[in-house]
Structure formats: structure tokens, C-alpha cells
Image 1 (cartoon, rainbow, N blue to C red):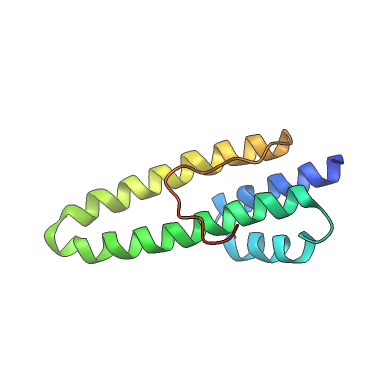
Image 2: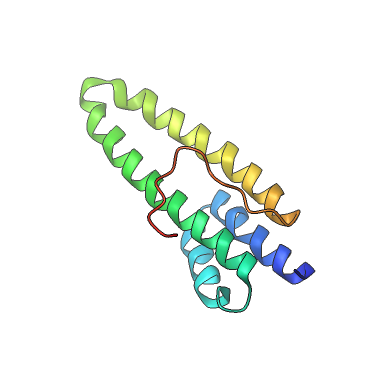
Length: 106
């Protein structure tokens, strides 16, 4: 694994922290065939984003009974924390396995 692989792998979750998830997914789609590491990081990140969308939709529906507000806050905190961990791990050359996600893409 080259330093470029680590840098690209680290950029995928890092860009997501700043709200550029679509850029992260495009970066993965373009570079996945060139690096197994970038492919693994990208798959994990895409599963994470899909899971967050599902969790947020459910929490959004539950806002009606006020439980959803707490869930949305918890989802936001969870997203930030695991994205920071994933970024640090990827820059270090490790693929981070996000907890509590549904693995649609293997």
C-alpha cells in the first residue's frame, strides 16, 4: 500500500465530515479499481452513509412522538465520532469497520 492509497482512503471519510459525502462516493467510484485499500474504505463508507440515511429517516418519522429528536441528535454525534475515527484509521492504513451499520455492499 502506497502513501497515496492511505491519503485517498483517509480523504473518503474526511470529506464526509465536512458534508461532501457525494464527493467521497465519487472519489471511491473513480479510484476503487486502482487500490484495494481505497475500495475497502469506500465500501465501508458507502454502507455507513446508506445506514445513516435509513436511521435518520426513521428518526425523522419518530419526531412526531418526540423520541425522534433525541435519536437525530444521537445519530449526529455518532456520525461525527465514527467519521473522525475512520479518518484517523484510514490515514494510518487501516480499514475501519463502522459499528451499527448495515453492510449492503460487501
